[in-house]
Image 1: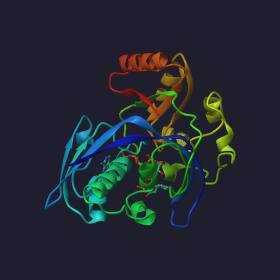
Image 2: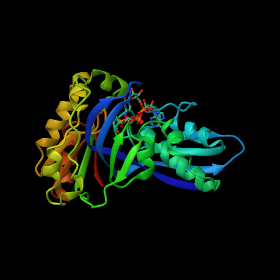
Image 3: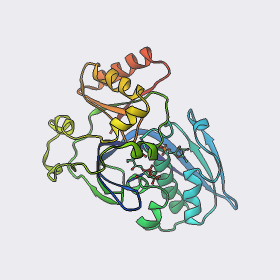
Length: 274
Ligand SMILES: C[C@@](CO)(OP(=O)(O)O)[C@H](O)COP(=O)(O)OP(=O)(O)OC[C@H]1O[C@@H](n2ccc(N)nc2=O)[C@H](O)[C@@H]1O
Ligand SMILES: Nc1ncnc2c1ncn2[C@@H]1O[C@H](COP(=O)(O)OP(=O)(O)O)[C@@H](O)[C@H]1O
């Protein structure tokens, strides 16, 4: 049996810099991973089966279109797979992609086989290759041009909040008015830890405006985070609707979660460290 953690992916920035002829968008994104996430457990079996547990189990498909099963199919092996679903789905924090990456890691370990090449992995989703890397990554191309950011500027207390609405990634991309926008600066590696939230404040998530257009409650989430003491930056992750915020102190992050849960009992709010 092999168990692999599937961390939440957070796009600290997400610049959309162009669009390919096939419709996929070119991105420039600062990606990090949180210490909260799903959990994938695999055990050898003659036929593949999937059990989904956890607080968000009901939010995802359990049939062949579950990304965990698609990952097993890509490898051509069978196993009993258990997925503990702790992350909201269709939420901009790559739950499905991270589950797929964790399944690839778990099954290749279980059967001692190689991880498929990047093109094959991309068939599971544009976010799956970055979810295989973890750490802090600059993601470009459609999600296939990946480079570790070696200097550690994270470790900032982070809060994630989702207002309970799921957002369709293709729909948000479709609504994006301008497809060609400025990338992040080339000198991404030169900033220091203390300056990081300010530097990040100069970056963007170009999908934030079209996502808010679809689900105005995202703006309420951002306002709620920005109103909390110690919040250095709040922004939407991915195509939404989850937003993250970085805080100066651990206690301020915990207090923010408590206050937001109190004011909005139906929202999902957690402290996460990257
Ligand atoms: C936007 C991002 C940013 O990290 O995150 P999420 O919001 O999904 O977390 C990702 O690029 C999402 O990756 P992923 O969710 O794996 O996308 P896919 O399944 O490959 O594609 C779903 C749809 O999103 C659009 N898409 C996705 C990636 C990309 N670079 N350009 C696109 O235009 C396409 O319309 C595609 O049909
Ligand atoms: N294991 C899975 N976890 C979450 N969603 C899944 C999974 N398998 C398939 N999906 C489908 O993938 C879609 C995108 O989910 P997810 O990866 O969580 O969101 P996002 O791409 O916004 O980060 C959902 O609509 C869901 O139906």
